[in-house]
Image: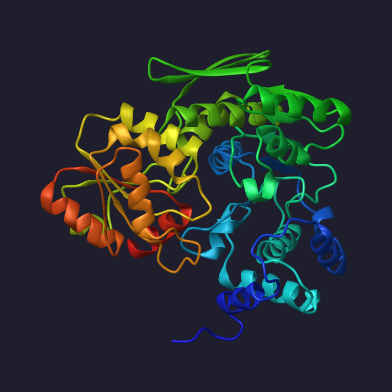
Length: 426
């Protein structure tokens, strides 16, 4: 069945053809289209702009839960989507509907006039256009890639900026050292605008501090202005205004405690009370971040398996995932893994090798940049994992369940794979 000519999927498909590259970092095309649309970026509710290598989406989700716990309405922009494009744009708390999405996509496509522009750029402009037309108290913008030249970096004076932990990733676009990558991420810092900073390697922190000093941007930095830790099954947060004793965030992993700390620092700056900070911990939802799958066809196919899904995909994410697995109750664990060919696969898999009995590699269906399953399997064997291949996630799960029906199975390696899994399991 073909899509209607004016469905959002049909327009998005046309947008893919407007530029030969998926990623081409510059803001010139974005500024041109924003000008043609009478600058919607100047008519948004107060903006919180979030950059970083790891934890951007989780931190945004925590902040949104906290703000909504205060009774505030929140726009939110994130990428990539998992199952449907609509997930990227949340208007005043609700995912954008098909009619509204089609309207802003159509308008952006028409105003662009066939000029060259990347898919991410034109769809980001569409999100800003949608945000400018719906009332809300706050706008949360997650950077797509980098920061300095990212299509979201068009807000002259956000209310607040946030930089989550920085690590090596996307070297071909951002540079091959932490300082170069940090320079790109720090590009979201604006003159005089406070910036919440999560835990950073010294090399990255030096760059952030230098940038902030040059722009007169006050830092609200982990280890200096705020601290967060887990104690006796609770999250403890402390800053100059006092100490909070909160539930652990509803997202698994020690790294989520750090993300929660950055979110609380942001919420406190925005005027949140303890109840709102608690709502951030208890109300947060973020798919494919160590998400337990409890229903759907995949679960029904292997009902005794403890099935998990995670979309982390770089070395730092692998280390965080290894710590999560180490903290779970003892259970035979197997991995089903599919990755993109742009990632450091050995760096991702090495921290997982001691926590899993085997890895079954799959190619990500419908993804032209997938790493072939045989290469994923070879990389797994190189870091000490017993590895095999399967035609699909479902086939891999069946094979594991046949040999170990009560195993723990973690599907991992890419948000694109996670999206496919969520689609298949819906």
